[in-house]
Image (cartoon, rainbow, N blue to C red):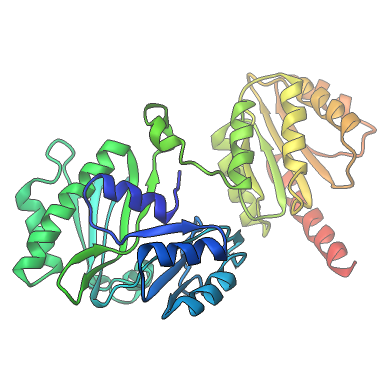
Length: 386
């Protein structure tokens, strides 16, 4: 679960982490009122969207006066940044920056712990630093039963800063950031840039916090901050209906029973030159209504050119899946090709039910996926020509 920068800064304030005061605005008039209320001279205007790369996209700008603020606010509101439309901006005091740094705590599954990551190269995407100058990124794993004691926070601060005053400030900030991460069940707490102002103050100019979805049942105060994207709303709806669903950016919609088989299906689609549009595991149920809901979910994606149904019948009965498909297509009309592979329990009965239907059937997984990729490529050409 992600939250906006301004929400992250509100949490920083609660945990005593120094940020820059600002106001969230949804219109130019609100931005001007914030400028006056905060008593600003120079102001930074930042788009509030749940994605990175805002600066490169033109979503972060400095206004030198009130008139310039109005023009900048008008230009950023409504902007499209990586598919996210900016509906709010953060107006805050501009800071005279002496130096920029990067700092984060992140859950590292390989290290099986939280890892502290820091670099003296702040203000740019950390992935760029990692690719071009990996030696400039420092990582310290955190032992969960120890956390971040005073000596470890001081060690990390000394890696980032040379001046003792800055080390003292950073040491306290690092301990508070880790406490924030633990207390909110965050999976990522990132500041980029973490800056030293020309007056010598350590400030978090940005706040990026992600949370563990599985822990939100015990963090209602955090969960209420959740603003799902359309894709996330679809995933939540699928979860409520008993599916495991993840939206991707491909053209072959997948319906599979079993997470392992679903992963193998997506791998083979890529191997044969196709692109999966989703991960969809309908589980082991034999309920035909589940198949109906799954088909509606797949066909709601306008990018899908082909639907591939890969069923290995163990607990799930192939004839029930076939009945569910026939019921679904009595309710849903579509010209999208449907490729079906039914293998396992009652596979013969399932295939017999599909005889004379417009579905493309296959007995093996490889045959079904090759056919789906071919139909996807053909359908893509037809759509492109049209």
